[in-house]
Length: 401
Image (tube, rainbow, N blue to C red; front, top):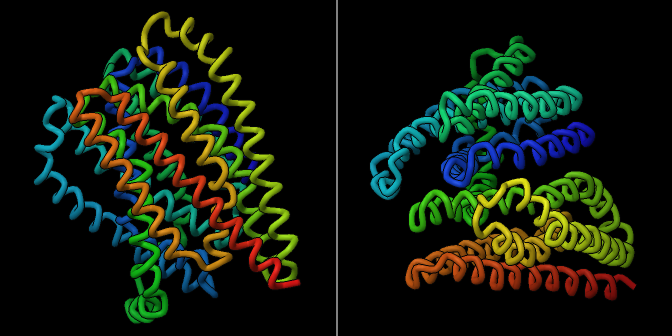
């Protein structure tokens, strides 16, 4: 599955640069709004109960959860978008907001159900299906977004995403066609009681985390317009690519290893964590130096004067992303050390920083103030979080001697 993730991410990175020149800032701003809505609402639409599919003891129980959520996701998504539609005047500053809202509804259903299928494939250990589908999805997505430019211009990125998600959805349904059946309601009621903590604790924490990580493009588009939102979204997408690759290649291995070491050798866990943080930061530092020197120079030549402020956004946000790199690959320590409450507090802080940043930027009519506040205080939050976990690991390592 790692191979598919890496290949898909490389294709997505190259495709993002190519499509950015083709579509421009404004289209990327609307696309950022679209992706942010999907990213936030898809967290709520399943109530995070897709975790039950993976942790089920039997295939019968797993498939029962699958069929239950297959009905639940469209219902909750419809309800959420109906409520969002009532307050959609918030987005009326931009003329394309209502069509995007409608397409985001479809995108959320497609995306959420696709994640549902992937959870079932994970339970059955059919990782090759997930890996190959990620590569196919990325290829078909970039291809469709390219050919749809001339016909749809601003909305081509969104429509291409929708069609590619729909095609993968059809493929997944074909693979899981024998799984679809009537839901055993008694088993679901029993399962909901047994997994009540998922809805009570994991869901709120993940929703706040989703808002903290994906709300900014929506706020920037609402207060500063689509072009500024596009530059921000593209900058974060470029900067986030290596972090995603690092996290994908390390996080699961670290999760397994840290779980074992926490039980057997806490001192080695402390050493391993420090080693991973140092190596990740070194890799990210090399990438950021190259991006902010040779990379941005080549991008400016390629974009030929378009994408104003891209250099500034990437430079400032590089600091935030560097700080974020220190924690993201080792974030599974939250589970290993049972620090869910700490994670919830941090996510609340990060969301608060986002809101404060957009407030002061709008107050002074200067989006760079928003970017600076997000970088300084958001980055500081990640540094303090890493420091907290390292200190905690050091203490338990000493106590274990």
